[in-house]
Image 1 (cartoon, rainbow, N blue to C red):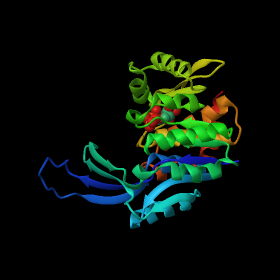
Image 2: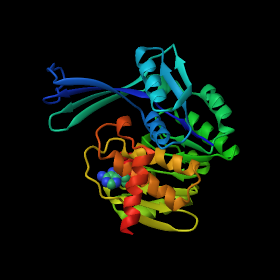
Image 3: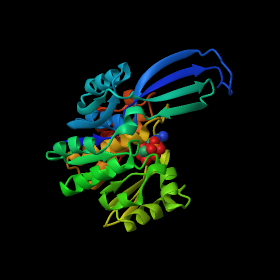
Image 4: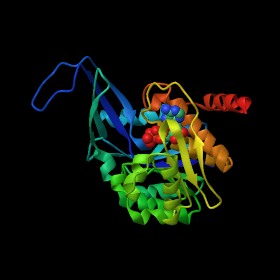
Length: 308
Ligand code: ADP
């Protein structure tokens, strides 16, 4: 089967500076680089690295950045034929400044991501026939996300929704979601309560089930995850790793969860895969370059089983 990801592609334009400029100021930076990002593309790369046949649907602009984003996906083994090059607009970018203390300031301009609409959902539908999982986030317009989730449900495809950014969530999405994967901040925003420890995360996971999702996983970074299914609600502590950069840990988690479900792993094994991928991604710098491959995840899990 396959994992289909419907979501955003951004090029990150990163400047490293001694300090962040104030309004009206021009300062000299130390370094500049570009890297491929966007939650959709990051999650697609994460799933593909773990061996899942992965197809991406979305839009880039008719510019050099769009070509770079498509090449990056293909280099990571993602089938990018479902990504439309929209000549009428520019590719999504994240303009990032990071100072020497690690403080950052980020402007995201959605560009082509913001133009995704029903015509893209039609392209997506053709790919659902041999898909096992549809993986969604909220960096493309919510009506398109909802139409995609509905189509997947009708096709019997498992729908995973990472509700980020949570400000773009719509309550009407709940009924189409098989697995909702908010982090603690997103869970707090969606439910309007404070979610900040295992106990409140467990309550949140159960609250999401009452709202109509089949399973909910609330991720708590280095602490682990709380989940609720029809059978049980439980907390699973994270694997201890030496943290270097937690950027895109959630993307590694979601991509790996989709790949695990595509492989028909049991619920707990799928969760362990996703948690291992999230933890491993935090041990190296960057978003897409930090996504672990199958050998790394299997090796890490063998280590855990040996301790058991
Ligand atoms: P997000 O990036 O969306 O905020 P999290 O930081 O909660 O997502 O990470 C998702 C999952 O990845 C966590 O639930 C955990 O299993 C794993 N993970 C993330 N950061 C770490 C870490 N520092 N140590 C161990 N596991 C981690």
